[in-house]
Amino acid sequence: MGRVAEGSAIDLDQVQVRPVERNEEPQHRQLMAAHHYLGYLPKIGHTLWYVASYQEQWVGLLNFSAAAWKCTVRDRWIGWDFHRQYDYDRLKLIANNSRFLILPHCHRPNLASKILSLCQKRLSQDWQKYFGHRLLVLETFVDQRFEGTVYRAANWLYLGLTRGYRRTRHGYSATAHSPKKVFVTALQKNARTLLSKPVLPLPYRQGVPKMMLSAQQMRSLPDFFVEIADPRRAQGRRHSLPTVLAIACGAILCGMRGYKAIADWAQSLGPKARERFHCRRVNGRYVVPSESIIRDVMIRVDPTDLDRAFQHWNQTLAPNDTALAIDGKTMCNALDPNGHQTHVMSVVGHHSKSCYTQKKSAACQPTEIPKS
Image 1: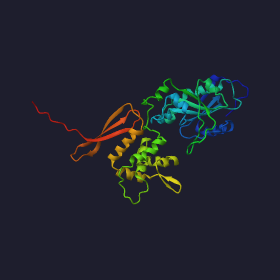
Image 2 (image 1 turned 60 degrees about the vertical axis):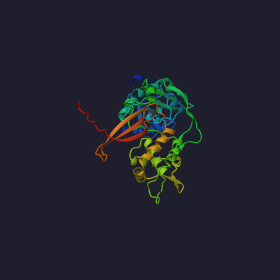
Image 3 (image 1 turned 90 degrees about the horizontal axis):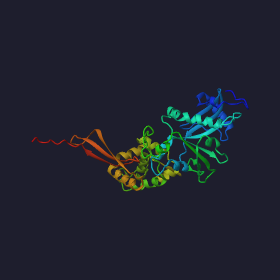
Image 4 (image 1 turned 180 degrees about the vertical axis):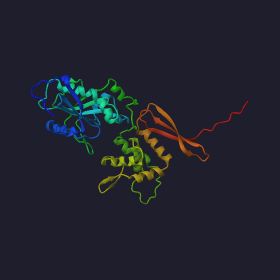
């Protein structure tokens, strides 16, 4: 890689932006670590690195990564209310410009805004190629000592300041640090409308609907299962039935499917979440039930009691739905004593995707109409 001569002119029309190739990543890391005041950022999750070049010589570097989990001014601008469970699943449609560096001796008028503009034009398609879906919004956070001139010149919108809290292993920091300036830009005109729709349209709606349980919802779930009879023998019970059921239901609400996924979700819970689910404490640590315990309980517990208790929780604490959808399924190879196939009718919230109730019924039998 060559270097642009100091003081030489750069024709902005010849500047190109492209993703960094795998064999170029060490050079990208080295330059970012050496010249960016925050250092280089490791590739974690959905991340794309870009290089801007002029006549095959590198002049700038950019990183785009996953969006911030929470940002009050951004969420308010979009129209998100995180009491509704579907908003968290839409963060994948936002990317964060986590690093932007113009290399030494390459600072020229309008070069940075030109690079940013070129990157914006191709980023959504690149995201589709690498991660399977397009982007709708870009965000970035700027230290208060900087004006954010590049983003303003590229027509990004300044929304305000963050609250200054940082994510930690145990949630968020107890005290606020230096707040950052928040800039955003929509990659298409109807981006905010799409992100705030009650039902996300295709092709943006993918995968299993997920929600983020609040601390109040975690604490309340076990209380709604205390009246359910425990089908296990009293001897050897390591975890209370309400805790096991609450963790299983919480995992399903967060998009987990299958016993292994539920158990993995339980293992990923932090100390505060485990305490809210009333997990037992062993040697100073909160312990979650294993996959085998979750499976045993879910198979043996009375489904009617579980359904009734969960409906009660849903009516009390779950998000409100303005519309309900009714969906019917026929269970293959499930026959009642009369040899009729079993049908299950479900009522699902149109906005929250929560199942309010399920009812099992036998197939309707045809009635012979006598000839007149």
